[in-house]
Length: 274
Picture (tube, rainbow, N blue to C red):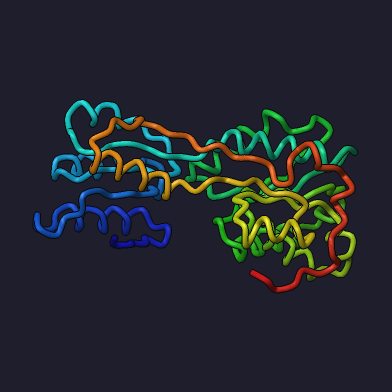
């Protein structure tokens, strides 16, 4: 296995993958598992992979070109992605449990180009309680980007006048970054007693932060890459037909049945356990 990182740069990612695809036949991989950066989903690179006899597995992204490529090439071509709209719906349901009174929620979203961020937002607005207003900020899937986004918002003259009743982030790291930004405020005790909600729910981060009271809730999102690898191996080694598109199923943590507004109590400060 060879691992490549494009550092969220779509041009770098395209160049990296084309270099692999255009390498000598002896060094080409059997398949490429990729989470596309940018807005296109890399259809031309996918076609180049198919022409070179390389499988193409897209994770965490819905693409519309796989059916066409499957008619042309016999290599593995499939997508494994989270049900991002359902993640957003779960966020809305969690918020309804944790914020029974009127107010506004600070909503930390992923970057505009991210399909996951777009779909999570779409699902969230389907189930968002009507009595909750939304103050939307953009970040880049990192705690530090959330710190910058929240600090910039706090510098606005009207930010103190908004009756916040919660903080919702589209991933756990951004949720904790939001806590960090609010922790530095003079009225931090008030801010940190709000419910903080995140997403990803890994055992050693999101789930652990919920148990410690740093987050009120998260959404457990099964990993896509391990399932993509499993399907790829079945297709290559055993010749089995695998679905063109597979959705993983998210779930609330804690379960919605046990989630109540009393879980908004949280420690006044967040220890540095990231």
